[in-house]
Length: 444
Ligand code: EPU
Image 1: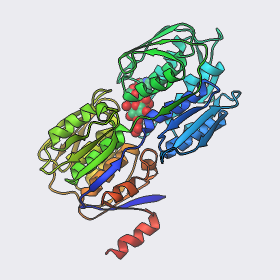
Image 2: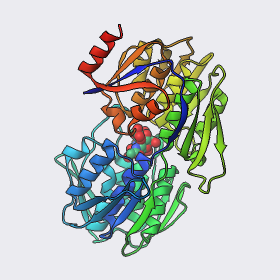
Image 3: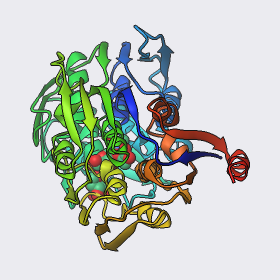
């Protein structure tokens, strides 16, 4: 298993381009199941989650062709065999987001068998809202041998009002599933308490260019007028706001100035608001045509201040940046209070940060981070994607060497993170566990 070896204390400098968003790309790719025409995507990132989604779609009869345009990756997906309806456990267990094939499969092929995703490191993660929503549209749902088996007794899904709110707010992939199913339903569907995340807006954009009739994406009420069929389309995946936020934290904790290109600043108000309060400044560079993909300068040249952060559904502060901000706040002045309202158990990074000298007290879904003068390098364990990104942030500023084990978690959501941070001046290398041991011994 690969590890990252990070020598902390280097300043960052230069510019980095933000890639297409993983969490936008996964439901976008699943939308290829909705028709038999080619759907071309620009800027799908090269990540293990994306490779798993390609594998899953291939098993479902979707061909994939890659031909870069202007140096940017382009992926064309086309459903060429629509007979298969089974998303098997072997793939679903590697990636929970596989659930987003359920809505498209059912709506287009009339039935679907999708392995029920299990728990994961960040919490329980049920899919009850996805299933209730599909039932409201007329699906019959049963559980068989760990698989969700969905059929449509009436032959076609029927538009209705679907409520997507749960105990922790709206569900993002649940909204994606219902939206992707409702586009082919008979009549009008109103999705109430819909997730407002920019990734849902991106999905609606693609579906509209495939011929769907959708109003209100990005608001809590989405109206979908079902159509009989959809066609091919071309789509550029929105930039990854979580990747952008992670690089912003990297600049903040190392007190550096870097430039981010293709940064979805308009989708990051809650993030830039907290950064500003901490003392990390974000300045848009130039005007750029698309407000979702501008360049910005990130700088921090003062002692960071502690702040309160509460994770919430969009447009609130994203849970996917909680760990990275916690890592950064370990070196701020005073006490920061971080409350997790989406995944109350998402704190596995706390114990690992403590191994690096952080002072964090957790009480239920809240953690109080008391700023310390310095963090020190240590061997630590990556537990999930964003927790691991938090450990990278901490390691960039720690005194000495940090070895992050199990970086396959990072590879799920950050493309070549070590090379891109390296180009900005960080000392970070990927190694096998054995190589890392030699490296550390050689460096004394
Ligand atoms: N929930 C339910 N019932 C459901 C679905 C969700 O109670 O049927 C609860 C969840 O347990 C959670 C809350 O609702 O407490 C929100 O979960 P949501 O369904 O919105 O999460 P998701 O759609 O499965 C996506 C992202 C996650 C991100 C969350 C929240 C993708 C592929 N995943 O997951 O991203 O944390 O939204 O914003 O889009 C990550 O990238 O590291 C990641 C975990």
